[in-house]
Length: 153
Image 1 (cartoon, rainbow, N blue to C red):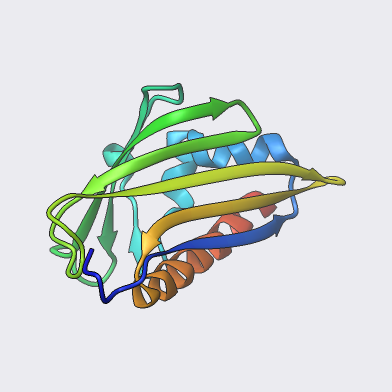
Image 2 (cartoon, rainbow, N blue to C red; image 1 turned 45 degrees about the horizontal axis):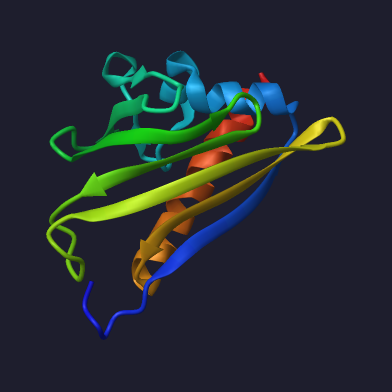
């Protein structure tokens, strides 16, 4: 990352109207992940999803633009910490992002907390430039709207 661009982490907290185990499962079950992940206007084909939820395991899938299938965004992340129903920590190494070096590691930490009969998710991801952080916040927020709908079923 260039010296003129400050890095920062995206930090989001969201309350879901579902027990912690159900919210955690939505992040780790391939069938559910395919139903909600990606901002509105993007989908994740179920046949692209592969998840191995353990330390050293992975989460792989492809987000595809609903209006133009030639636009896609593969995700290939590794888990470094896993505590069932409580914590998912991992990273993804990416290349070709303007303002960053040849290979950048984006880390993501998802904490699942009981909030009565609901779940408080704390998400931390980065490092991002300020503009990228805004886009990531918007993307996660849009995805979480889809997750709310899934959890309400």
